[in-house]
Length: 379
Picture 1 (cartoon, rainbow, N blue to C red):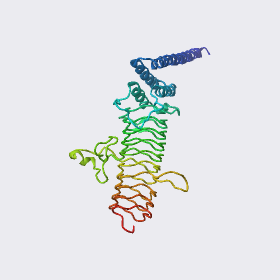
Picture 2: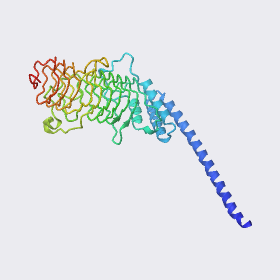
Picture 3: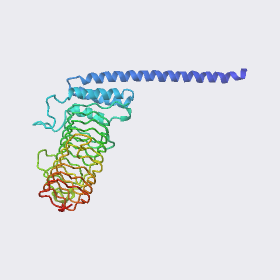
Picture 4: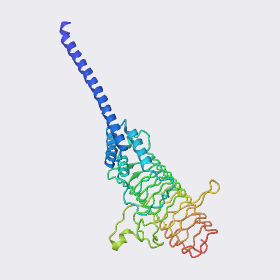
């Protein structure tokens, strides 16, 4: 019995040490949380400062707190989102589709700082709380990550103004983008699967290499949009209101600028997307896969108008089985397109070029064909 006392004493010492370590750990965590709370309060106070330097300090301090505390991460996202909704709100009477005269080429430093912090956060700490930037003015924002896709999955950007922004490699899957202005924006290599974009303005935007699987693009303005990385837009990509390349005159980048250009990316993927009522006037859409894409509504199911494809370049695109009944394709370039079993009933195909296109099984009853080439007299 006496011989066992040293072992018992050692056990008690070990237990006492463990209790001390546990208590110390609890005290450290309490201290750490207190420090984070102090840091959080100081950063939020800085957001309300009239000094830009102090506001920037508060923004980046909150970004550091997101990195240090997974528990506080969702709160910081909400605070930064609210900051932009309050301090960078789109004016109620603003027409976000048009750039203001004398518009600066870069956003306000605090706006850019918030977007940089949000774009570099860890989305696995969001705990289901999406970024809410509805009706915010984010023109000319830069979000280009070299290591990962900027995480804006299921973000709420309804009515936001992102005109002329550089937004390559964004994860916008399931995002709410209804009424958003992305005119002249660069949105290459991004994911917009299942995104909700009715009424969005994507005119003259560069969407090459982006995915729109199952995206809702009803009533979207895609005038002059650039959806393929190997096409060259004349006279200059992103020049809103400038005359676009005429059908048949769009050139590969490798042949542009004296043959020194190179392809910059693949085409956007619009598989199963809804383009009912979308404005695709002058859009460059060669080599596109429109499998399952809806251009016109089914009258028996829904009410709506067909997509507008006037002067659009659709050469070598896959339009098999597409529903284009009543669509406006006046002057469209459909050379070498696969239009087998495509419904062109009552479509406007005046001056369209279907030279080399596969049109077996295509239906042209009631279509306007004056000036069209490549269509047999009895297709």
